[in-house]
Image 1 (cartoon, rainbow, N blue to C red):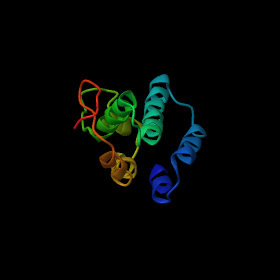
Image 2 (cartoon, helix red, strand yellow):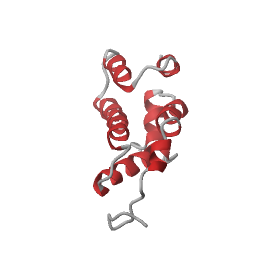
Image 3 (cartoon, helix red, strand yellow):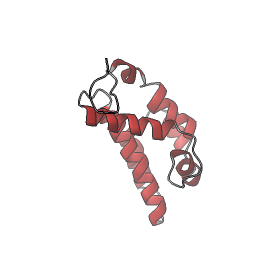
Image 4 (cartoon, one colour):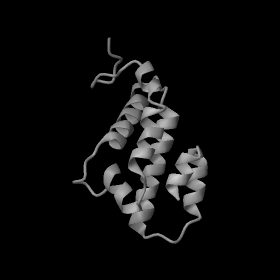
Length: 116
């Protein structure tokens, strides 16, 4: 079902709406889905951020989505496996297709100031 949703070009808001109408989930599954939803929101909201703290939120979210870590149960890779979500399709949509905006921002160094 999710593959059909992503392939049809349905946006994040519609994606969430579809998922909220599915069968009852455990608390852990609800938390996992909430984490993915928050990541989608953060990428969209902070994609063109100029304030260092907002850029850090975007960068941390981007790295969480791009990582292939399977050692932590709440990593993006593990969440996709547990919820049977198409990890590659979600990444393509969120990180690659929209990734041009990340490169357009001025990078932030570890102290929070704009890098030269």
